[in-house]
Image (cartoon, rainbow, N blue to C red; front, side):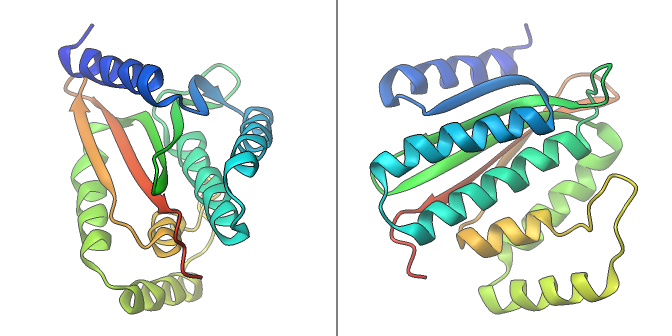
Length: 186
């Protein structure tokens, strides 16, 4: 196993033992799988969080990040579903969601540029970018309008953490993490 992927597996295992993740999944992400995750997450989060605004944000972000895997993973199963990893966890002050999936090397630089640009924007700039994207974009052949990453960072108000791990000359494993603060403020 690649040393970087072994590192991720070790970190995830340590986190699961010490923090008790509500959900960890690796495999094909289908519509039914996503429905199952949202139901499980709703049950677990509802037991711990009474703030409806935070719950809505967690579910919205969870669905957006799962859709990113189903639509943009370069590792597709025979049924046409994207493969990846999905983790949702809780800390005292926030929830976090981590996804990982294979992407083609040729998209890494552009994706990194987009993420860094979004991380550098303030709320007003993100809102304006979102409006412009809605006005000027059509639905792509993968079913998206390019709004997912913008929408997630707008909803959470938090910067992305990410990493690209080189698998070979053609593929990287893309890990993306976002957090949803418990003190939502909205």
